[in-house]
Amino acid sequence: MSISKSSRRSVGARLTAPVQRPLRTTLAASALAVASLFVGSATLLQPAPVQAQAVRGLPDFTGLVEKTGGAVVNIRTTERAASQAQQGGGAELLDPDDPFFEFFRRFLPPGAMPGLPGQGQGQGRQRQLPPGQSGEEIPRGLGSGFIISADGYVMTNHHVVDGADDIYVTLTDKREFKARLIGSDKNTDVALLKIDAAELPVLAIGDPNRLRVGEWVLAIGSPFGLENTVTAGIVSAKARETGDYLPFIQTDVAVNPGNSGGPLINMDGQAIGINSQIYSRTGGFMGISFAIPIDEAMRVTEQLKANGHVVRGRIGVAITEVTKDIAEPLGLSKPTGAQVSSVDPKGPAAKAGLQPGDIILRYEGRTIERSSDLPRLVGNTRPGTKASVEVWRAGAARTLQVTVGEVPSDQAGNAKRPQPEQQAPARANWLGIMASDLNAEQRKSQDQPRDGVVVTGLEPNGPAARAGLREGDVLLQLNSQPISSAAQFEGLVTKLDRKRTLVLLVKRGGEASYIPVRP
Image (tube, rainbow, N blue to C red; front, side, top):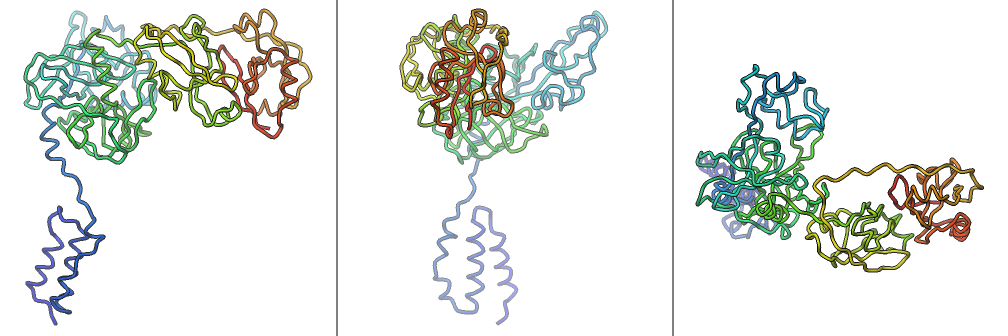
């Protein structure tokens, strides 16, 4: 039997059916239509394959964009040009007027691109003017933001407005307003602006804790100045640790310079994050972008609105991660918590009795899964609050009460501590360590009134040297047992199982950390 021209046109129409129909279902229906010409119409009564029926179409974002797009704004910043006399010359850096200036400045490290400013320098080469003609307003950068209240409060990134002399906000209806900077927080990269307008469209705030990995999300912003650009993707990971105070939302949504400060929106049309960073080896988008969770950002903006700055709590400890090699010898069931490497002698933690080598397991009843959890929890605590801290010390848990202090505006740098004096080496033990008691001067320099011995020599190929110990290190504990003298330390070493990994609490340069030593 031959197929007529009309039949061929019919089959062709099915193969080019609208996108809304799953391709697999369309092909299956076409195959059935052709087969029916040979075996009869009864074939058409057979149901479509179950596998084909289960295919789902892609989401339609048009409604979301119409619902949320009006609350997303374009932000441009300017600076005042300085005369040559004011500048004192200046290096030939990449001009801020260059459309790729913000791209390279934000996503490449200082010194990685010729002509970019390094750390401690300005945002770029200022436009040179003859003496007496300074003050001309010149473009500086572009970014995005979104309206969080109908009376004109706008949320964006700190790095979008940092260092700007003037900030302009453009709405989707092309109205432009000069914005006031209410406050900005560098640690979380959040800034709050205010424009004089009323009855503005507002973007609803969602709950990022309800996000699921694999969920569809979209971004609206102004990449490279292209206003109201929409990109979509999925949530790739949650609680991605890339900073002290923030667990970022990782997505594969295309984010480029100019998207910074724009919202990350869920399928309910709610802002669940602020697009802030990308990971890239080339300076361009590589499928990994990061957003600030909106709940963290809202906490910051509430403080910015009330105080103009953010007040954070502190307890005065330096911390490091707890690894499996450290957890097992200390008797912990799994590598969780934050290891205290040093304690500010005048800080709240010292007054509460925390010590170097303590493992902080819980803060105010909340488990510390990773060391980065602790700064965020403490930072969100109001100064003056009495907080409970559960620590693991000498094989047992204990709870201490710490009165949280306030992070000073300017943190003083840690002073370098003198290294302990070298002493005549003793005979090395099976770990390859030669240790001696600390003298009075060494105890004073190391802030060690009682415990500890100093490493005076190491066998080059011994277990301790392979683990990274150095001469001059002060040994404070061996498998959670305090070390009070060189003789006592040797006694502890002789009782060790030489087939099992041990852990030493080592103080170096004013900070203590656990070092696992494998046989």
